[in-house]
Length: 214
Ligand code: SAH
Image (cartoon, rainbow, N blue to C red):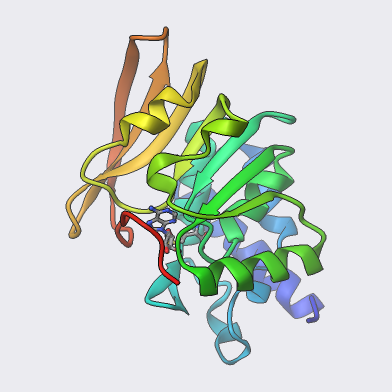
């Protein structure tokens, strides 16, 4: 795996593109600028790595569009040392962005093949999140509560168990809707029983599914 001047140049252009699309948090842009996204894609598709679009990663899943990754990360307002729970490791790219932001990341993937592949890749790249093969629908209560929770798959409703694992003052971001379209939804937990909900435009993600896949 090589990160050449050409890759770095293409990545700079990508960062500029997503800045123009409205991402203003410099820490998010810097994180994207530092991560070789082409490492997360099969070698045959390297030319697509620095286009601002989602791309298949096998097992019927996709690596999210860089703009979408940046948008979710910006809304979460991730701060150094915060505990962040990610549902849907997928390629591991979003995980790397959260780690570059300084977060202590706990990430869950339900498909064994992707879990193993992304765990191996992130370890080679020097990223050390806590990896779990399991059902993100139920979260990871034993390590909670979390300052931030990010769901990177579309869901008709936000699982109640995940809101329970959010710290008071914490934030959860999730694309909520049916399989054709979801609304980016930010939940801010104000007290044990109250949350503030705001909506931030339409996106399309692969679905959040219950249970695990061998
Ligand atoms: N964050 C990823 C996006 C991956 S797509 C990236 O940057 O590449 C969404 C991922 O969520 C898929 O890998 C899918 O298998 C996973 N997923 C779907 N339902 C899940 C669940 N209940 N628990 C954990 N992972 C889930």
